[in-house]
Image (cartoon, rainbow, N blue to C red; front, side, top):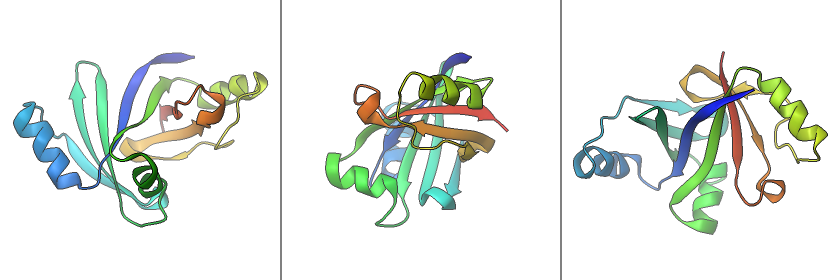
Length: 133
């Protein structure tokens, strides 16, 4: 079951510059950085209330984030819903005809299991399910 909006993923070209904006202009505190080699991305995390912001910088030209930036520019990349049953959420989505990008959850940032739904079947919004490992 979906329990909350866990985070918003925001694609950026330069993680250092974007982090500076969130810290200095908005007064938020970067809670940590992480590289997810399997997704060819570096991340930085901020918390606003109960929702996290995940800044995403590509580490390779063929990464999903690099492709997003080339097509759309910087901005909101995805919404992530926290769940207590990621495989159940994927099954429910698939049963409703939603196109899964990942049929099996994989290790993502922040020590979570993650899986994505394709935006062509979610009204244009890249949707992530995530759950603590």
